[in-house]
Amino acid sequence: MSVEISRSLVGRLYEEVLNKRSLGAIDEIAVEGYIENDPMPGQGEGRSGLRDRVSMLVTALEPRFTVEDVIAEGDRVVVRWRNRGTHVEPFLGLPATGKSFEIAGIDIYRVEGGRLAEHWHVVDQLALLMQLGFVPAPETASP
Image 1 (tube, rainbow, N blue to C red):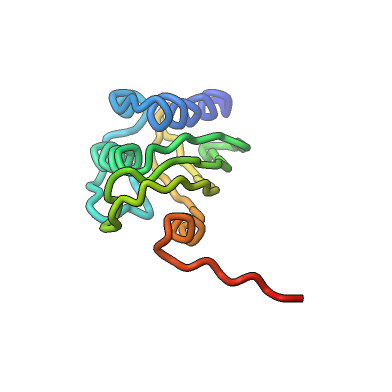
Image 2: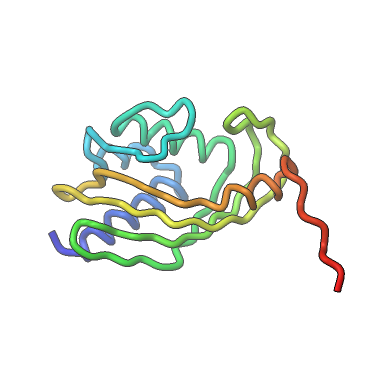
């Protein structure tokens, strides 16, 4: 499979699934045995687990992802993104705050047979918790 096809597949996840909330597209872009290497509490396994994850994110945080970089080689696709949203429903045990946030992250996907097969990520969770008011922001250092 070409890296352009892999890049396009990952692009569909961000645009169709996460930004346009088309969860049905998950069946087209992920394998049944999808592996999440950092599952959220309550997230199931496989492709249905990916659907769980996306549902939790879009329902609670109303995210809007902007893909800033995509790097693809072999069966891997790396995405650097920015996410702007609003915390409108409880999320991972945290009550809704109604506050807006902007965070950054990096995802790595493994593609197999023309579908997403595995995922790893790094997300700026501290920035999210500070912006939502669950962790105090550090005081400004004096000169």
